[in-house]
Amino acid sequence: MTTKTTLENQLKDAMRAGDDVRKRTLRMVLSAAKLIEIEKGAAVDETGIAAILQKEIKSRREAIADAQRANRPDLIADSEAEIAVLEGYLPKAMPAEELETLAKQVIAEVGATSQREMGQVMKALVARVAGRAPGDQVSSVVRKLLVG
Image 1 (cartoon, rainbow, N blue to C red):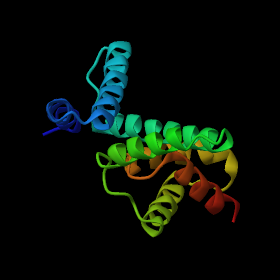
Image 2: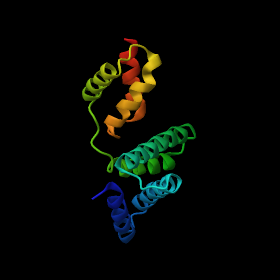
Image 3: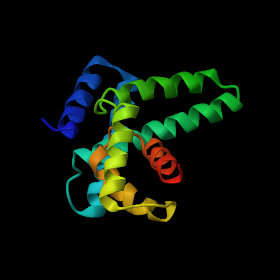
Image 4: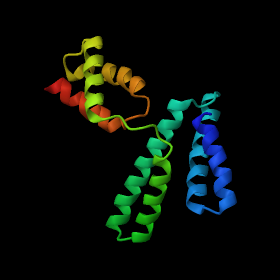
């Protein structure tokens, strides 16, 4: 069963159970997926769903930071609850050691020696990571390896 199908089934269950946080969060993910499908004219694959989930988690973390500056504990609690729901659908996170090893392999394959080739490395590495690590974490590992 695909992640998208799972999300749709979980949305129905959340509606039956009256779980407003889960219902609201899943609707947001599914509408983002539908928007991408309309733009591309093709179905969103597993990697695309993982990217949507990570993007939405990042958005919620930014909302938490804004809510902390505004001293709004109610908004912080809502965003944290949504993050918990979203993280439940992400693939198991890649350990930092495994990410670094994979980055070293890709750097060797691409033949990158400086930060100018970072784009080539990122393109190949992000495809292999397949949503198991956030983009900013991947970027920082590659940058560290290319500089050091």
